[in-house]
Length: 96
Image (cartoon, rainbow, N blue to C red):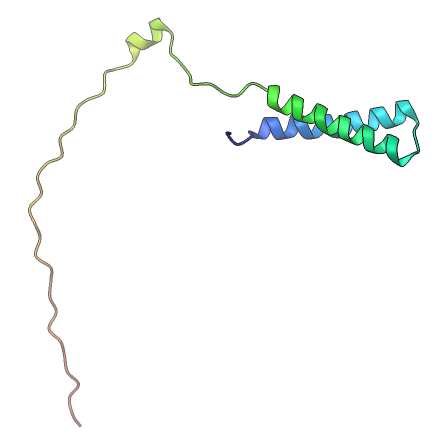
C-alpha cells in the first residue's frame, strides 16, 4: 500500500475534525456511547475521504509537445588512464 500524500492527510484530518464537531453539535448528545459512535463515524468518514483523493499520476506529453522534445543523446564515457598514487616517505622522529 503506498504512503498517503500530504493532500490525503490534510483532507482526511480536516474531515474527521469538522464532521465530529458538526455531528456533536447537531445531535446534542452527552452520553459516552453517543460520543463514541460519532467519533467512530467521523474516523470512518475521514478515512473514506482520504482514500478517495486522487493520487498524482504520471505526466504525459501531448503529441505536439513530443515532437519538440529532442531525442536523448547516447553518451559513451571516455577511457581514463590510471593515475599513480602519490606516496609520501615516512619520516621517523629524530633523536635529540
